[in-house]
Image (cartoon, rainbow over all chains, first blue to last red; front, side, top):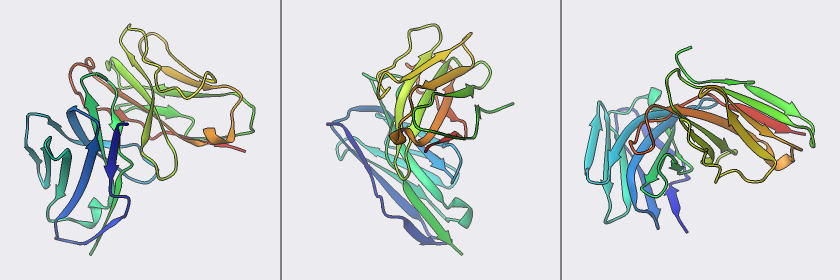
Length: 113
Length: 116
């Protein structure tokens, strides 16, 4: 069956360090991958999108990689700040399910001063 | 408003009652989605509307769940004869253009539904 896995354990990191989150998938052939941020009591907010033929995408302090061989995406927050503390969700869209995003359960990031 | 608006923000009801949840998408967005998020879980797809096409209802968990979108804008998710397992946050999202282009989805802050 199709599965998306994100580390369920919270990532605790010191301010200024780089946070790296992992999103693994099985039995998918995603065409697109998106990363969202979700704060408590709020809806997810879109951060980055990467296509299957792209290896890396950057936006300010954020970087996403997409390795279709390893079936994995990595999400990096460089020079992390306490304001980056949130839950980060990865989501896939496949060519046989256009319009429908399949979400992982998310990884909580806690950045301490 | 500029974003996706959902109402009510919280709903507490007794088991067996019907509930209606409302979503106002961003103006001009042709695609509208409903998701469900249980505590500590990822988002579970429920239903997807795209323009005037028939909605994709493949994620609705039972026939107690239904949704409609009037005039290509506002959507209502209805849950009949609610059960305790229906307790969750129901999120609505909208996006521009069609499913063949991967547009970001813009989410509302959800309706937190509690079934007693």
